[in-house]
Image (cartoon, rainbow, N blue to C red; front, side):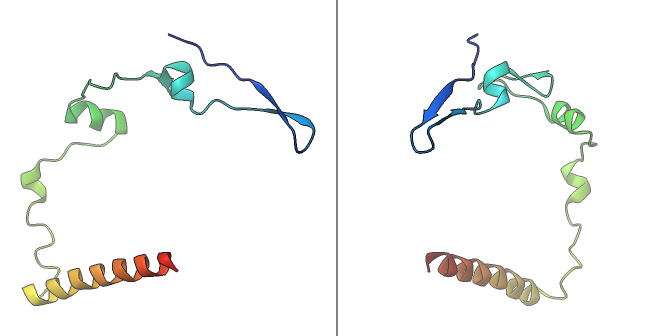
Length: 97
């Protein structure tokens, strides 16, 4: 594995040397917070990911239907979703200005 090194570059505008940092520790050291990194094609199971993050895995059946009583009608839910889309459209238009 190649080792990343820090290099110095002369800043022509300021007339002084600057130090360039490595873009990421993962690229430099091959690990992330003391853990070895995985290869691109490797995959972890849901249980492994949950253990790493300190959470308990949940079955989809346990969360299906939760929140079904948040809206009194389908129309009220549809208005909620329409509001989300309207705010997103407004944000995009503001970003263009």
